[in-house]
Every structure is written in C-alpha cells, then in structure tokens.
Length: 343
Image (cartoon, rainbow, N blue to C red; front, side, top):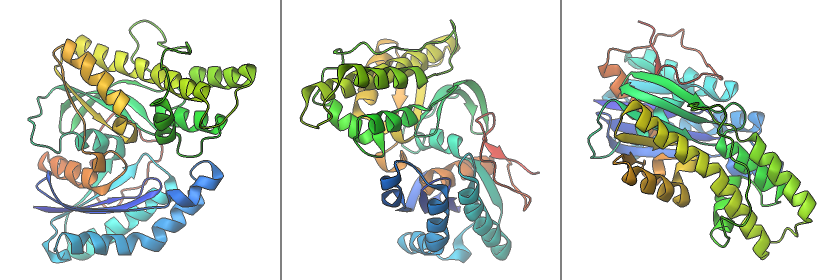
C-alpha cells in the first residue's frame, strides 16, 4: 500500500509517499525557519501563511519524487496535533479534501507518536513493549510503547521542553535561533564539567522533566560572571558544554531508569534534539552498560517530516484505525494515544 503523509504542525511543510510503513519513496520538506530567525522564535502567522503558499507544491513534489499518481495512493495520513492550530488545520483540510475526492481512508496521526515511530523505520526488529523518548523543540516525553497503537505515558516536561530550553539559552548567550544546533557547535570546544549547573530530578521515582531551573541558572550565571559573549571566548564554550550536559544528564538518567523500571530492553528515540551527537553518545553508553538497545531515526527523520506520519499512519490503519471528516486540530494533544480513531 502507498500512503501519502502530510505534516504541517509547525514551521515545516512536508509531504511523503511511503510504501507499507517503512519504504520511503519520497520525503519533501519546505521550511519557513529562515523567516522566523530574526524574531528569535516561531511566529504562528508566518508559519501558517507559508503552509498555505507551498502545501500544494510540496505535495506535488512528493508525488513526483516517488513517481506516483494520486490514483495509486491508498491512504492519507496527516498530523492533527500537537502543534500550531492554524498550521495543523491547513494540513488537515487538504488531507480531508484528498481523502474525499479520491475515496480513500483518512487517518489523523499524533505528531509525538510519529516521532517515536521514526525510530522504527529501519531494518531492526522492534521488540514490544519498549520505551519511547521524544526530545524536541516543543516536547520532552517518555512513554512505554506497548504496540503500534498502544502507548502508556510515563513522564513529560512540566515547563520548558529541552529544545525550548536550548532556544532560550541561546537567546541569553546571543547565539541566535534555533538554539540547539548553535549550542551543540559551541559546546564541542568547551569543558562540560566547568560549571555545575543544577539538575532537576523532581520527586523520587518521577519520570517528569523540568528545565526552567537550569535555564534560569544560566541567565544568572551570565549576569553575575559578566560573560563576554563572543564565539571565540573559551568561557562561552564552557558555558554551552556545561549547560548541554546538565540538560542531557537528566534526560539520559530518566530514559534509562524508565527502561530498568519497566524491565524493557529497547529504547526508541525521536525528535529534533535526537540528532545531537553528545546525547546519542551518552544514551548509547548508558544503554550498553544496562544491556539496552537504543534506536535513533535517520537524521532526515528527526525533524518534523511527513515520512514518519505516513509510516505511523500505515501501522495504525493495519490496527483498524480510521478517522472520519470530523477530524479536527488538537494543538495541545498529549501522548496518551497514537491516533484519532473515529470508528
């Protein structure tokens, strides 16, 4: 079966054709990120206008790259949340129109679940149940993945997501937006043990996250140390390396602890922050010591993309999930379930 995936949850407009949930024939992405940089964050109105302007072209490019026609598509999968309300509605509206006009099924896919599924789009056997971790600009979530359409929430951020903390830290350090990549680059030259930034583990046994405290600690450190904010300043490199390690120590500790508590031997990691090489190395080292297999998506599937939506949609369809035309945007959707099943 050929699935057309559509993703418009934030600043990426994406369309993808995937065969049988894993074989990616195309994965076209148009990003409005450059339009947001001067504002230091995503501007919803700009993102929505960009989606409107290019969604039809991106879908056409997705079909052309896959050498596929509309009449060969058997299923439409679209992100319905979480994300920006207006942006989600653009993708949902065109997905409904295509589903209706082509008389093929429609499935609304949870964006967070799609990120977890992206780690399944490889040749490695997935051993359910396993633990799923999403680390991105808007989300930090731990779940137990019991099956393709069955997840149990273990923990999530209570304030900033890890990617959001990086964005705010980069703003304090005058490094630009988005923050994750620039902090990672500066951290390569620094000492991660130079500054003892706080780690918030919350109450004993909790798998929830909190990154607002370490962000505030960074702000106070820069103010009190009278830090000279130049990219050639060794102290700046140490700040970035130490801040990054403070974030990742908590994520790694909680992810591995979740695997141990749940007695699970496979960890699936997804989201834009999962491309960070330091995080990957830390997770792999800790996982190896505990006999846990950790799986990351290919880099092209870490950021928001439609291939993961199409792949997840196929698996959900095989589980008997199908949406009807009452499907609506759910901008604050959590990861208590994988899809919007309207049957």
